[in-house]
Image 1: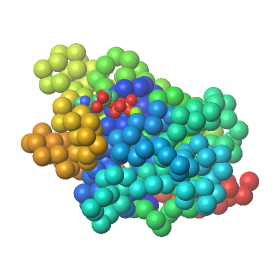
Image 2 (image 1 turned 135 degrees about the vertical axis):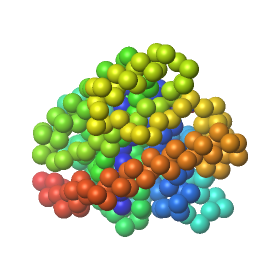
Image 3 (image 1 turned 90 degrees about the vertical axis):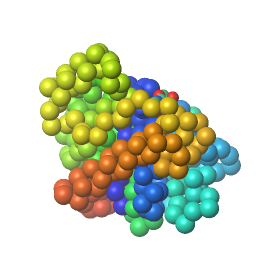
Image 4 (image 1 turned 90 degrees about the horizontal axis):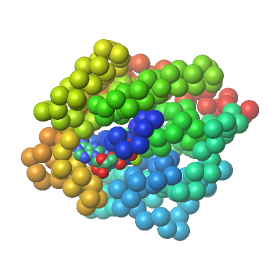
Length: 279
Ligand SMILES: Nc1ncnc2c1ncn2[C@@H]1O[C@H](COP(=O)(O)OP(=O)(O)O)[C@@H](O)[C@H]1O
Ligand SMILES: [Mg+2]
């Protein structure tokens, strides 16, 4: 089971869009997929057409990551209908905000990791949609992940948020004495004709030469249309939809290659987990 956080310290840059696109790519590969909605805005839960109903949710899991609670907080998404493979959702909740304290107790930032360790054999890939803040929720997500994907738009403020995010990853890594590994920086929503975008992309490449991913996502209405009708982009019939789907395939490849070639983040989750839990 490979776990990826989709993160950024800025709202509205495309985290949820990318999480959905990757889930769509995993579904197209018939991988057993779990999407974890740790953002109190619960957009990815909505995007997967899951109505927050009677089921338990992420807030309950963070409070008590026991097998019973975890099981009841996961539901199958509407994408799974008429298909063999599951895209499940660990359902989001506005109540998750209660956990998003800036100075959490150390054991409170390992709770998602604890929950996911129960699911090691149930899924091939787990995608976590993060909130834009750097408090307990994001830390839970990062510590539970094999890789962290940082999403940015080519704008001034988003560029500075990437610097802060990379620094925060390093700091948490040192603080918790575990390797937290960025997958890289994904540039989203670029427009070819924009001089400002070209300038910001050049700046990003200069600032973070090893981190900028080859995959870049242009701004496309097809993504919004697929989202609006709660469909995986891989099922969206337009040419533009197909091109976007291919970009997400490539992004999922990058993730899989990264984990395969350097699995230490992955291994750590299996081995250190037990030790942390017993603390
Ligand atoms: N590449 C893209 N092309 C077109 N629209 C996009 C793209 N990426 C994101 N959007 C739109 O931008 C808005 C914000 O994206 P979202 O994924 O919700 O960001 P975040 O999760 O970071 O807050 C959404 O309406 C989404 O549909
Ligand atoms: Mg979002």
